[in-house]
Length: 178
Image (cartoon, rainbow, N blue to C red):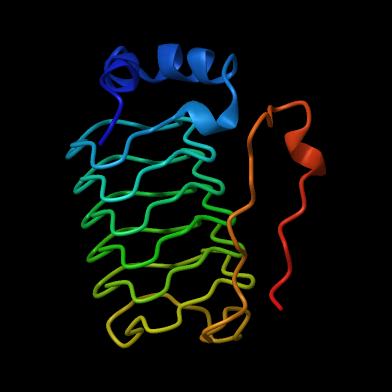
């Protein structure tokens, strides 16, 4: 369940949220199951945030940072993620119906067993993105060059981030698949 104090901070606006985010360790953002339907979260910093099961239907997430965020089983149906950064994000079992990932960066994201019907990926960076178990048939704009993968192994694993902050985060390496 989402931390109520964290939700209050987010509802104070993106500028205040991002200022607070710069002052806390990465593991302190718990928005699991949060109801953020239709929220304007453009440019918000959700790096490493726990957003499992969050309700983000129709949310505006353009240019937001969701690098290494855990969005497992989240609902992002019809969300706008234009130029959003989702590098190494976990979207296992997420509902992405009709979501717009135009020019988004999903490098090494794990989008396994996800519902991507009608999702738009025009101009998206999908280098090493794993779509294992996701039906790609109704997705739009997937590049013809297969830089993305569809396999059980091959996406980044979760990296421990206890005590990690922005000064040290650049030195963290994602474990390669075994």
